[in-house]
Image (cartoon, rainbow over all chains, first blue to last red):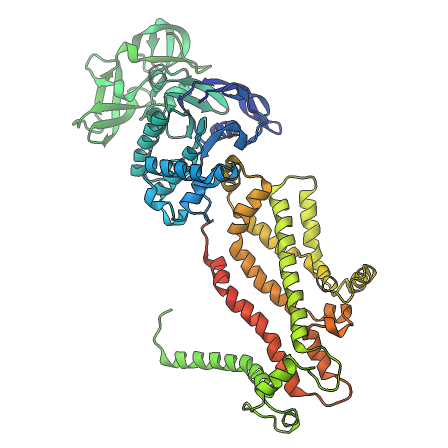
Length: 351
Length: 283
């Protein structure tokens, strides 16, 4: 078992730098999820750890060993690909055993390991089938099995769930989580799905345009997002942002209504408030004209504009509520749930 | 198309039957000719129904000296020569094309595309175009009247290289990456992954190349002067012009019949893989 350390890791293609000075320390046995929008460099980062992409500058350590110049096979890692990348002409058993066969393990040892992995993943009855005879979920398990039999120091997952249907994805997500806890292998998981990221990761690395926006536990990211990007990316529906003028601890919204905050700031700021923290309150500061209602059963989403402005806001209220389109609703949010960001730098202000 | 128009069905069947007859008639005449005595074949009209000399002719053609009165090799030897030539060309072409396509698709080296286009441009230089210099080279290498001389100049193949390149490009990159993580080196990847995944394409190409090799005429005619090395396709033509006598049609037809068998056998044997190569899409 081993941790992973990234030291000012940079990747360029020609003159274009796609990853900028990434520093991170991943602990032994930790499950880290790299999350970000398409094209943010998350897969590239994973592939650099795997050794499938060369490192432009900086270092990658697995355990205490610098692995920059090692072939993927010598890094003691296993990777699960988005399209599984199973060898179509080999049976499930051969697929799982291939890496071990190349490493020249004794035959009974290979058999034992394949059997064990198949038991863990409950694919024992499929061992002699070809990948094309399996369903998406089963192929996914085989891909995992191929990773497990190698008994690696690190698991790398490159969006392994994105080819599955929604229900299976939730189920596999839980299984991956359980399996990782059980095996205790350091893992990096890449996804663009923030729910997947929140539920799987011990810690999340939010990547945007090649920069690490924030690296922390899901709760930290939710409660104290370091930037407007993280605040908008984590949580669903996304956080509302209202540009305000700040002076000390008081804010003035564009419609002239003022409110007090814990944080101290001056000048132009962005006030962030999550939809689920807004509640109807006649004495509240947020006046919203309802434009659309979404009934999800457990919650009702109210879409509307902040009264007197054209700023879109969303409120998420518990249960099924009887509001009408066109109605003006007054909402409030607890002071400790208000986030403040500098409008120019988009960084978090205060606490 | 599901249509119920009897007239159309009859008409289309007639057209098809006519086509079959046009293709099959020469084969039938060959078969009929191979089953009569030599004299019968020179009488007018030529027979349309098989005679009783088929096995006599077969024996004389296959094991005997073939044409009486000339010094041609027995037909089994010609067939063996043809078989060797066709197999060496087919396997040689496939081996070289697989390797060059593998190099072009999976390795980054300077002037990679330059080499690819150099291979591609040889499409414009078939043997017929470069026949004099090629003959000169083969003669100077002392390869006249040998299997090497028959096959080596025909082995390099731009078409097959191009085809395998296209096949390799359809193999997902993840397959290579997965193999790298599994610890497979380039040649291991080639043997364990690339070759099995191109299996059906190799089979399809083998059929085409075998027949290409079997049907070679001009090059074997030039390179082989020794009758022990002559191929069957060349020999049929020579039998017609055999030393100042009327053609022995029964023997010639029997030889032609025998010359058809190996290509037919290859097509039938490879048919299943060939069709799989066209229908299997799961890579």
